[in-house]
Length: 115
Length: 115
Image 1: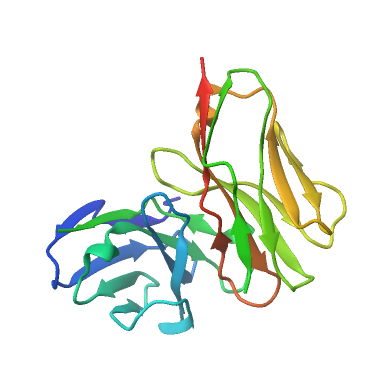
Image 2: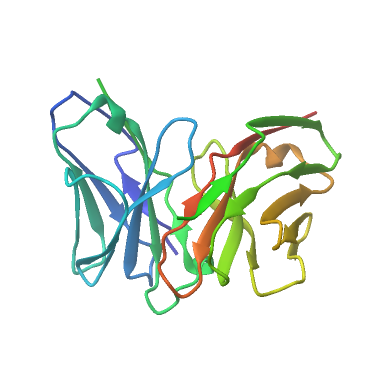
């Protein structure tokens, strides 16, 4: 039973570029949430996707966008990268029908470095 | 807005000792969950223990237990008989019950278990 899979594990981009991060949820899960974890900080909620729609959004600019596919996998896109976007990006999957955090499974994240 | 505060950036204890990690939070909500997550070097967030605010009894999971003081908005984690594998970042976290799925994390405490 595969857990949450994120790719790539590490990524280096230049300021102003665009980046796409990918997440495959745990088998049986249909909801994907994305978090940004800056160095020395706790994760911050970016947004959540269910049924291919953004259901909730945290306090992040429009440069951060996402998508969910019919197979429940998800992408996080960040445009016009800033140095401050350097962080670990975590994906968490869950089942919409089980809205308890016990059902959350986190991936190991993508480490994005913007230079 | 809800906030979670961890006042101990880093702690070290000898193996087999007991250690307590502190957490305070602020909310005007009455129904919510509180959690402790562990993030080892593998970067994956692992749920250690959770507490429903409506339950007065403190949660326990094997060597892990919490001291939940609702009126004081305090939620500490006690690790008994600490093991080398407990070395990790520990995050205190909050989520409203039956509202949204956003988890609000503290900044974390880095725990070192020394041999």
